[in-house]
Image (tube, rainbow, N blue to C red; front, side, top):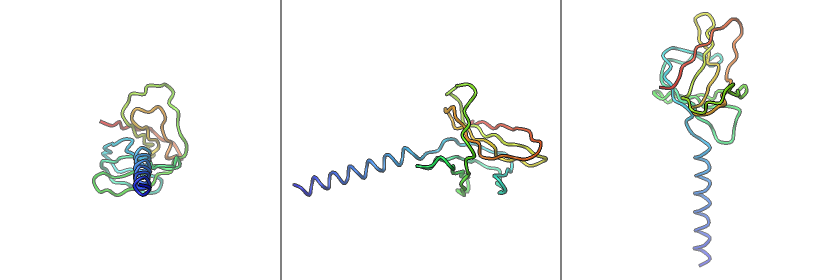
Length: 133
């Protein structure tokens, strides 16, 4: 009887940890980027990308190319609070255009008021915003 109780408690503990892990990780948005862009010094090809929140960290996000499954960690410079609370929007990416290059600057998850500053450019720039379809 003791063995069954111990096994049952072990199974419940494992399921609870798996459930907690699954809730902490997840795709926060999937966007189609129709042009080459840069994340810091790294060039990224045009394609479909998704941002994934990794459990237990606020210091970086995972950027994954859905078509090639290649991914990279993107450091979060800081969180950005929205000026107005809409709470009902699709994911958005903001790019800074300097000359003919586009640099990933911000990521705003779907249905969330807070965004992430993920890149800072130097020099004169123009903003380009892409929204999830």
